[in-house]
Length: 396
Image (cartoon, rainbow, N blue to C red):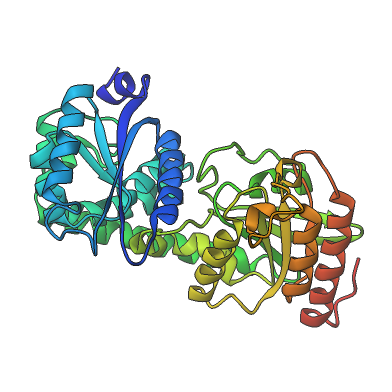
């Protein structure tokens, strides 16, 4: 049994740290930290406490101010905390300074996401992509990783590149990065060849924020057994399945979920996964309408699609998890302005159907509510695209 096995049997305890700035107010930071707590849980860590600080901008040396860092250090010592997770990407110097001050394992959002990706990767392609992203993250932070390994911490944030590799110098890591890039180029070529072989069929891609139910929907439409659970980044490898709706076959791919503050080098590493989105004819944008911040999630997805030059594709908006939707009804004598949690599902349906340029449908994939309506909408959308793209090819 290796070190990882013994550590990962038991959840590690973590402190979460965020800063309130002009760009993000207190409510937004709490929301980000809730998401960070869910990320930590997915990686196998439980939140013990959270610390926030109101500052103009993060401290370039220690992210938070000196006094706040002392408070965190005292808490770490008193409660024997195994790690401190910061909600933004830390610079190599910030990491070193914070680690020296707190004398425990320090992770940032990027490293935590990388760790989950390493845990989730199943195919050779996904494993290569994760390894590349990990080495690129590691390169400027090599000295910090050494201090970790000398303490034999292991556990979250330490998955992936083995301890022997981390003991090597920058030159060897650079060589490793170029080897992995070459390997990915070869995989990209193979994938492109595979995609060419799928001609004459409309290609649809499921897109959406992470944990909105894309894989559950994929399983429902394809009757396949794609890995689906209530954790972030449950899907890392692109799954492509043939689906038949009515008499019409098309190809459906399930892609990695998008998330706010996704590290840019991760987006680069997952280029071939996102190629499924770029090369699709139809986008099926899945939204978790039961999430209080679903509108922010929609914006994050649209921004990512814009980066992929894919915002102008034929799109269906699927508002999922209507069975889990809740709202707070306002009293008739309450004259304060209505906020998001005061809108009923019916009101949101009207708003979104009027607002969106795309066809919208409200369903529950898990409870199989309105699935026939979804199949009808899919059929019409796929048929329209089929007639546009393959006008001389008869429908089956």
